[in-house]
Image (cartoon, helix red, strand yellow):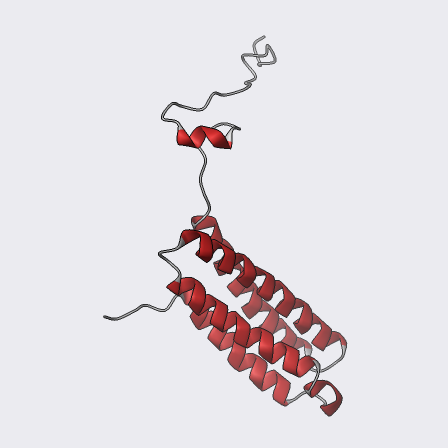
Length: 149
């Protein structure tokens, strides 16, 4: 059996590699505080991505893991920004790391969007359990607000 690795896990692995390179060049006073936080966040990103891909048969668990993955990405972006503000790395390296983290965020958002519960047309989410079509509550023509009223 040949399991496929999701693109977000590959992207997170590349981000982890770049974070390791960036932290190696940190000044000593930030290497063991912010550097450790960046490393831990990037490692956590890879691990959560792998765990979410393995939880495919449990949609509720997978959604929870994807939400946690999204929070992890947001936290990592803030830490990257803090590293730049503390002048731990150059603008070019900050831009690269931010772009890679944003790519992971877009992939996570798309994955989460694909696994959310879809409701039928209408405003009542409870209508999804019934076989009838959801009622449209208001339209411009029905309320007399149409273009030809």
